[in-house]
Length: 201
Image (cartoon, rainbow, N blue to C red):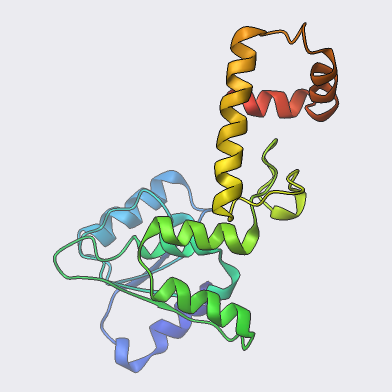
């Protein structure tokens, strides 16, 4: 980031512009000061890490360049580009990559052509799968779903039916006393960590 800042400050086309940086290792007070200056128009170009991903509302921010965009997930790219174009000046987000990987370029193209967060979440789910539905793992590699996929509409309908059946069964037999085999199966699948996760969710 320091190198990018230095490069931009040396760029003749940007001569006279006030260029500063912000990153997660700065103190909260320093980050607040930089954002206040950027919001007030005292900084023209802000070079930043993803610390600006959420909670930043600067109406006069109109252009964002995301370097190494291939390193970010679909949802994160969507969050990042949502930081610009919040005022009357419109917004433009440029996704920059050196990658020549066709899958990567296709993923970035789909992000570029779609601003619907729900559609992008579906795309992200399709590409990364559903993660561990009984825990906090984000990667689809840890999924506990063997015969179902959350990207398949019929499977989602089946899951909803099973969920309703489970709710009805628990309402009638909260401790599963009348269903000892089911209680044993659940105990074998849901450890304390997963149980706590489910309680939170």
